[in-house]
Image (cartoon, rainbow over all chains, first blue to last red; front, side, top):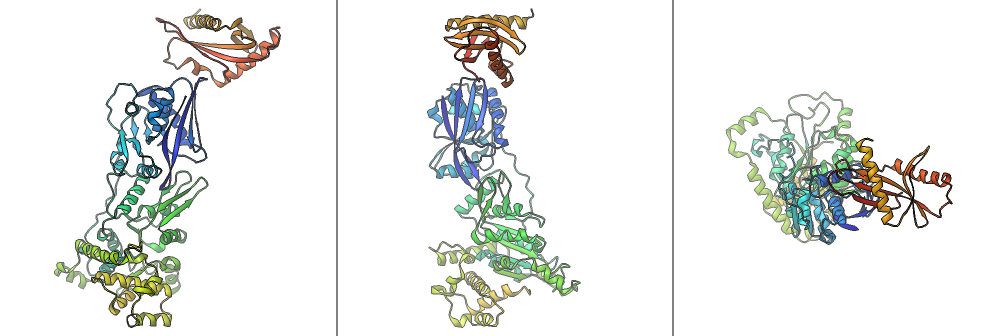
Length: 511
Length: 119
């Protein structure tokens, strides 16, 4: 007797449908699992055996063969347990084979027969739905995550017994407490309000510009200038994620093993430490390929504090995601793809001692050490950073002034409403092009056609290009930022003042 | 004879009845040689059948069939060849190994299961 049901093999964010077939033969008892399972999946035999014996209906003392098809696709993890158990018991006749053959089963079994919640349920369900399957049996512990997928029929089960009853088995129902995912230990960084930033109005303004245009940002300044403080306040002034971004961000979070409470609608912030490896940043792993910080920052902000301290190879691993908005990881077993459309924020000291350019303390670095330090940020990487801003240490005068005039500083709420308005204006202009923010628009579209600026406006820029102080790529970046500045000012085409301000925001790094 | 061996003996008797009911011709029981012991030697038509009998009073320690390890199976195939070589009977055109499992609760009826041609 053969019975089959469905499950999903995940490779990065993409999933492939897996057919789980069970055959039971009259031979010396045994349990064979074939179709390229990894070690964790091979253990499914023992989990399924114990779960079935302790809950519902013991496996027959016969030869059981379970095949995971397509057999050539490597499969890993524990999420096939439920599908295997149900398929075997259907082959034995406990439930009708016809009741399960088009149902997707996802979930790990505990030895007592309860169903454990799993990571990556959301992308798995999305993949199965894309393949045309709409009936799911999933762990009760993942109920909230499963509810995020529209247009499907979801049954949540707490135990194998409940799944069997659902498919029409005649076994008495027993209530058991469901297994739930433990909430991840979250390290709460107090977000803080933008108004806390004192004495750096230029930097705050640049942050608003970065948020409004989706521009990547480099903050350069001595220690204590408030670079980290500024960067941590960026996600709060970004607008809510749209539906597609929210689904992507939630899927990645689920893949990373974090419990999903609901759709993630606020932009995430990832700030990996500078000792991170390339695999930690972009994702990796030999068998299970996990998303890295760049993928987890999708839709939000990837903040690299002390950027020159990162190994050059690690930083340059970001060039592919910055270019394409996705990460492709090749391993011997498979190729995994993750989304990675994040806003990059780099913070750096201007030199190893950190004091170069500060007005109060003299820099002790030799010119060569200074040059080498910032040269660690490779040209191609900096090329993608539209805004490069110098942040100065706050003076006592500025602190006093700020204390006297608390209302003068921009609050997070105000900044976000300005950003949202600017994005609406940009969206109206970019409507139908597929781009959402100014940062995505290629330079060629800004230099020619409808968006071309009059020569009188671009005159200072053209002069800088002629003199060689500005490259062609830099020229395009200034144009992009100028459009964002115009959007922030209420729309229309950029004026010469906007261009001048944009030029200042990118040339402030003296390298 | 201790109770365990007695249960085994009764199980073998029961297995012989089962085989005879299935038109097997039993030619030997508890045949011993240096390699080991064959519980039942029988013919199913022309085919020589070496039968291993496993008897249990309950399934609490696993099904009788689960006690047939790969090593035990290998020995049964060796024993079949030993029997053909030593018994003096003409060499059969084919032979195989069967396993009979008997679950015989102390207060109930025996349940006999028969697996043919195990390898």
